[in-house]
Image 1 (cartoon, rainbow, N blue to C red):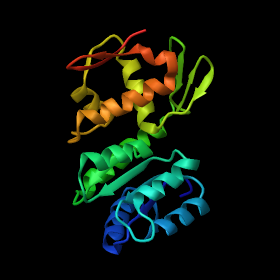
Image 2: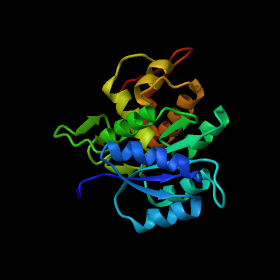
Image 3: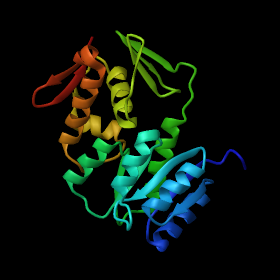
Length: 225
């Protein structure tokens, strides 16, 4: 099938790659593999149309962070990080670099494939009503682009999702927990600071339009123009 979506699995443990491959192939994905960071970049640049990357943090030659940094210079492909260390610092670093999701090992492959499905549904959603306008902000959901006063704003996948969620819920006070559960789409065990980091970056990128994201002290945020 030509229309199978390609997923690149990068892990130095062959058992882990096989486990992921078996699960993803069952779900009708085409799976490419790499056993270290350098090979990951080679495979990524040789293959067009990779829909998503599952990337282990701890690898020889070049770790997951470095791979992510390199890929983000040229591509916004969704990246799921597999990490053995669950730590808020790690997660914040990952979000700074443009990681879309975190899954800490050991994990259930079912949860992983559910996350993969959710991300791909969101990034490949094409919808006739895909243009959303709010003040000077315009979002094209199907093209995953955002402009302010006609100027393109370069948002990461998560910043885009966050802005869309704010706009969809304009005028409503949103707690950090609610934002985490809706934008991160699962019971995220991280910290509210993850959201604050994203909001700070989003406001900065939107310029004056970012003032529409109001802080509600002790609770969360509200989008109001």
